Length: 471
Ligand code: TYD
Ligand code: MG
Image 1: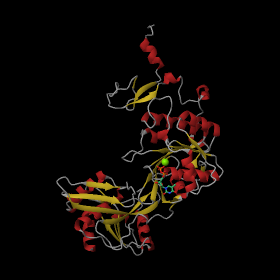
Image 2: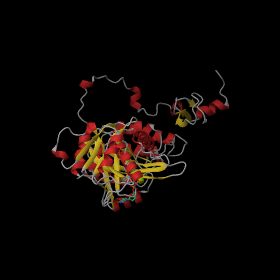
Image 3: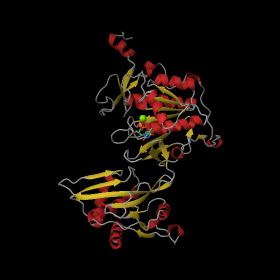
């Protein structure tokens, strides 16, 4: 046997190792390049399994357990999961009906958008409904949370509050108090003493989220993790966080306007892309049950560069105004988009030039989805192109005009999913002219579209020609 030198004995005591996020290779110290797969900057701190003695995630009895039974799918008693409504209809909508026992929800959004406010309101309703709740705050003191609760009009609230950032203490409290719902505000402030890296680092976030997820699954507590977002708007921390949890919700919206959207990006217990709409008032967030027209700016007369579209993300159609400004630019014209994909904008400009002869090569192009909504569906293409052309020509689109449809690289206008529902919503809100993909146009005269003249188009040049005739 080799003698144990000072180096090996020191190594054996070392608690942490560095693991590559790409290949899983390990190194005893941090390196810029992974020694196994040569990837750069992929090593992150993690706990060495041998140092922890046993698998950190296993509970004692799991180690002794016999193999689990194997059951045919058909024989599993699969009654739908019991959901507890939070008492806030718009939040329940994105959650798929309410919170689920043992579910882990991650909620992200810009600072100050209302994450803590909404969760405190939801916890209070759940507590009033007789559930045991716990609010763990790592960012604010208990007094600050209490002050917010007073402002929200939640006087006499029985929600339990704990100001704590140490993972072990949080887990011990969850174990001791057995709440039905616990909010961790935020996961970036929690740290595990097994790791030396700072709270909020990739290693800490991953470790703490894994432990909390385990706790949720084994004890049945529903855990809501608040997550910070990076400057680009993605959740800070490892992508693996989104894989670990059951539901991922994002807060969207312009902090300057009072409307906020909560969108489900992933939901193991419900539909994705469902959106909940809230308005920020002096008494906290209030659900907006009929939101279809709140993202339209109120022009008394049509203005150039504006086109309304109907987006259908989730189950409700939403009318959103797309604005474009085309202005002469320098040698390197700028393309900027807010709420829409910038790469897609570049593509649409190329299609516009190639297939409709509208050139913006020497122009700055700015596009914006009004109200801070983020539109990810390609059905916005046609409205974006019409708004750009309208701004370039300085000619407004007709009054009461809407358009939607995806535009392909060959200049074809492709149908949007559930086009008739979109058209019905537009007709209901009093819009009078619609340019839509041919496949979305209704076959026969339906009463639901009364007052709406529908122009089906197959190609982008056709749409441009049509709009010119409508002037
Ligand atoms: P907050 O929930 O603290 O945001 P987050 O946790 O996402 O960082 O939201 C705070 C903002 O909301 C703050 O700018 C003030 C505003 N606000 C109201 O307008 N009305 C209210 O009743 C409350 C509590 C906050
Ligand atoms: Mg907060």
